[in-house]
Image (tube, rainbow, N blue to C red; front, side, top):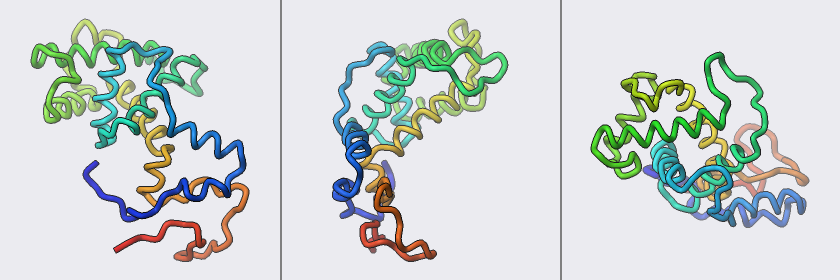
Amino acid sequence: MTNQSHYPSYNVMDEQNEWDAHTRSIVNARLLRENRYRYITPLEAETLRAWCSLLMDDSRGDIIGYVLSHIDEVLAKGQGEGNREKNVPEIRTLVRNGLEAIDETGWIHSSKPFFELDSANKRLIMQQIASNEYPNTEKWDGVPQKALFQKLLQFSIEAYYSHPLIWSEIGYGGPAYPRGYVRADLGHLDPWEAVKEP
């Protein structure tokens, strides 16, 4: 991650005794993820790790590992989607075929998998996919590039910003339930909230 936290001494987990037991168990589980996947394969995990690290500009293993676990969990559950645009495959098909196509981009570009490319080349490929401009190949047939990019971005953001380490870095005080907020005026902080450090 290129930016440093404005809250280097803040740790949201210091406040966990104020949360109810159910909330505390959910948040703590985010710190103790296993790297066993139920849906994605080891190769897909490496491709996804490289992709998500670049998307989030963060290559810390514990955090990106949590992002991968979250994506795997969503895909393994196979729940329906709220909505899906026309000509976009079902989410598990989109991600599985999309990761295979992303892996292929590395082989076409430099005769190695995507996750072994340098950052500049990975970023160039990612930008092409995000703009739906990567040259069409057999692997990309039936995989809408922009839809894949947006879905992986959505998954990455929702997992990344639910990790307690990131909460601490951005100064988020964690769940307010059951104590709630007392000082609701603009610029006023409750005693347990993060204070920006010089």
